[in-house]
Image 1 (cartoon, rainbow, N blue to C red):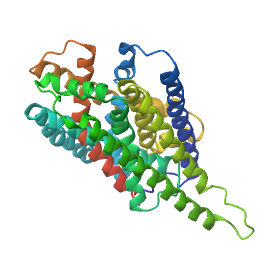
Image 2 (spheres, rainbow, N blue to C red):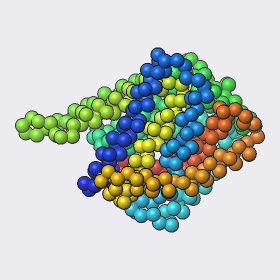
Image 3 (cartoon, rainbow, N blue to C red):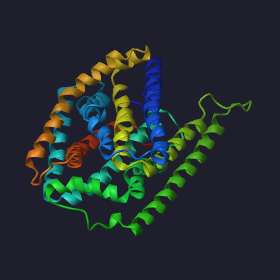
Image 4 (cartoon, rainbow, N blue to C red):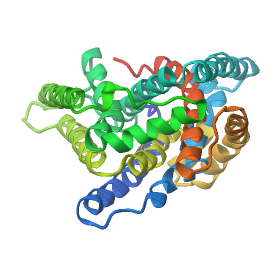
Length: 362
């Protein structure tokens, strides 16, 4: 299966439709929240949790709930019992092992969750840049690696730079129910944050500069003998990549972490992955190519429903099993995110499977 998913005219139209929706629903809330966070009144703490709470049903948890059909469809084009069984086994083994780690060593488990999410959200945007939006400047393994490093680091690191104490409080809400704390971690001190911030800014500039140079090279190759540029400008694709990178830098630097990550999780990362999964289904592609959204939307919701309920059951079991008490909204949200963490490890393995089948990495 190819990367872009537009081997046919129907698939190309479906991908364009989904790409426009992902850009609109991702960019609009980010563009609204940046000036609001800078110049508007402070958002009440309770309201900051609304997107994360909504992620239970609004794209967040459901986006990974369809792994059992996404992997087989990417591999063979159909959903087989063998493929579903493989995904279930991945979740049982990887998720189960990670769940045990939370009880045995909650602080390392929490730090691993941050690093895992850094990679996973980076790999999600690598697909979006190369597959969903069809840019060509990410054309070698180094540029792909830089893209994953930067795109994943925007939510996971830049929020730490802008809001170290609030970031600490979120991580504390992960480990608190297990009787641990993160008060002694040097990660939240000024010195390490300065080093990380300067280093990450330099890596961001390297990614953008190298991407621009490669886009210029593709642009020159696409220019016909009359000197007219090709119809799909590589520079335009790089411009979208650069604009998103700069926008997300600003967003995570000024918007409080719980709110920023909650909105990003629902309307950026999850929505783009859902678009990727929908494009794996020929019936949904055919419907979208004719601007018929009801069938693919309903099919996704139906396929995601039962695994989402089971995932919520896992969170409920955590609530009962953890040794500490959870009696605040922040604590409940933290425990919900621990459940998300347990599911993220096998989910990332499935996405790596999709990456291999779709040749996402150049």
